Amino acid sequence: MAKESTFPAEDVPDRRERILAVLEEHDPVPVPTTTLYLSIEDKRHLAEEFDRLVAAGEIEQTRLDPGDPHYKEAMRLAGLEPTTVPASLRVYRRKK
Image (cartoon, rainbow, N blue to C red; front, side):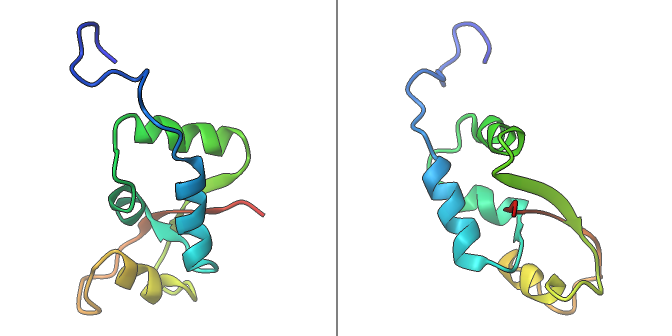
């Protein structure tokens, strides 16, 4: 964070359990990145929290392509209509 920032990192709570709970709630469907972001109230340094969980081997970020068995459900989680032009989604899931 930039020096003199109005959003200090020191008081950011640990969101690990909440992130993992959201992923577990929707398992086996991978959760679109935007959906996961929106499910966490305090978004400060959230990308870094995701990166830490990826580095620790607890979650992974991947791409979900049209035709994947979970694609339609992931699109629904992202709030996208079935008529939306098919495109790859960036998703997170628990690493197994």
